[in-house]
Image (cartoon, rainbow, N blue to C red; front, side, top):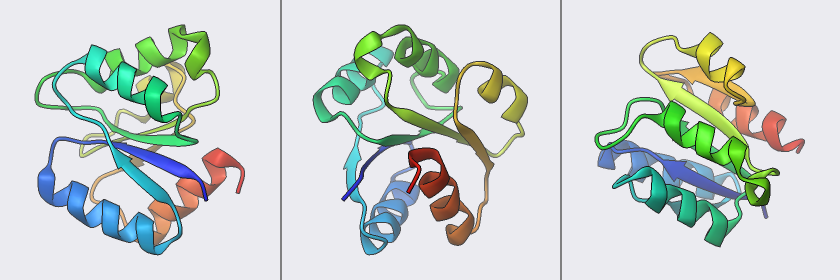
Length: 120
């Protein structure tokens, strides 16, 4: 069972994603969105196969989180899929994300994107 970490500030979205991904057989963990440091430590502690990371978080910028992930050798194996209601796909992919998905997305598209990122 692959572990997926959700880094999202919308509580309704978190609940829906946790249910959906759980039904698809993923072990789902949620990172806080208080600071880049909190998320960074959660990633180190949980060691997920993939992280679904919102670009625009309440307390931080998802691209800053991605930069921290890519600079940490301990997190080298974390596949990051970025998401946003605005098309930041070029910036996210250039910064090292394995994928980008535009909100609102269809559940099947998200599952496919996660499975592709982790090579499942």
